[in-house]
Amino acid sequence: DTVIVLFSRDLRVHDHPALAAACERARHVIPLFVIDPDIPAGNRLGFLAECLADLRGSLRERGGELVVRRGDPVAETMRLAGESGAGAVHTGVDVSALAHRRQRRLAAECERAGVEFRAFPGLTVVPPDALRPSGGGDHYRVFTPYWRAWSRQPRRDVLKAPGVVHVPEGLSPGRLPEPGHETYELFRGGETAGRRRMEQWLRHCVDDYADGHDDMAGNRTSRLSPYLRFGCVSPLELESLAGEAGDAGEFVRQLCWRDFFHQVTRAFPRINRDDYRPRGHEWCDDEHAAQAWREGMTGIPIVDAGIRQMLAEGWMHNRARLIVGSFLVRRLRVDWRVGADHFFERLLDGDVANNYGNWQWVAGTGNDTRPNRPVNHIRQAKRYDPEGEYVRRYVPELATLPKRVIHEPWKLPSGVPGYPAPLVSMA
Ligand code: FAD
Image (tube, rainbow, N blue to C red; front, side):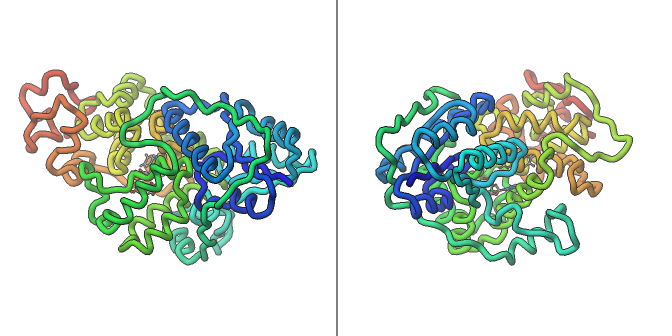
């Protein structure tokens, strides 16, 4: 008997419930990834290609293979099931509207063909449908009560990587994506790189997280987000190892934010489009301002530094994301979706739940619509980048400015040659 394991955002062999269950029950296992040409991976394609090459390597070390196909994932999975005579398809649960629709279609096709279909946990620490508020409703709208329930929820066991994976003979493995897509120095894709980073982080840095995570110039966060995005690292294993490694409470709380937005997205799949802004609120349709923001040319150093970090590295510090996002929606009054779409395109960790969930939170338009969170952008800049190091690193035009004016170059009587005047007055 044969089981197909359809990979998507779980590009790992450790703590992989769908793969582990297949290896336990079946004589033959076919690990499959389908590249869907209808989903543009943007600047994430290079990272994805590295993830797939690494996964193929790990499966081959275990006597297995990663079969790669191109096309509609449902049609390709069913075709392979027909060719191999597979009796079951295993996959991981996912929450975006697209993933959900695809999974429903796959389940229906499997039923029609008499193939068993099973979706396994693994995307989050606590499965997205595991917790229901006691007061009613199908999900938590507000973080703090979710965090309380999440902390108390029992965990499943972290699973070992399978020792061997037996694939049936005669399968053509298929081509990986061509190399040569945009990649970023700081982030090599794949489980091997992700586990190495996780181990270093847990050994040396997790204890410093509570004090250091808002230091924008300091490189004091894990930078594991792209690896969590593609499932190169298991969030459950990360949580469990963090608990053993040190004083990880604040860090684990961030993993809970990730779970929180996944359970919101599951219940509210149009999270990336719909909003519930207060009645009468109009966004300002200012393409000139939006474009300056996208390019990191607003004339506000902390905003430009954040955007330019993202353009250069495929990643942005969380504090910068908050400042840059709130500047767009509160100062420029541009629709949050303009910002969220740009982030989604450029971030290696860009995913529907975390990106659009956080943007809705920043804009106060999501399902937690408490009127919110005024941010004084300059005060934040001085607090979290007190020496101006972050700005100097990403905005070379300002590299020689003294600390006194680094966040407010408009205070210099002649401005700074080559750097734009502020788009809006920051007085
Ligand atoms: P760490 O501080 O080391 O945290 C560990 C992990 O916890 C992260 O890797 C991430 O998986 C999770 N996490 C941390 N903060 C959050 C948060 N606020 N919400 C959800 N999960 C969190 N994160 C993404 O993974 N993808 C996105 O597309 C994304 N878009 C964002 C957009 C905006 C406007 C804002 C304000 C935040 C966004 N975040 C997003 C959340 C956060 O900024 C990043 O997860 C974090 O900066 C990643 O760096 P790190 O791995 O060093 O995080």
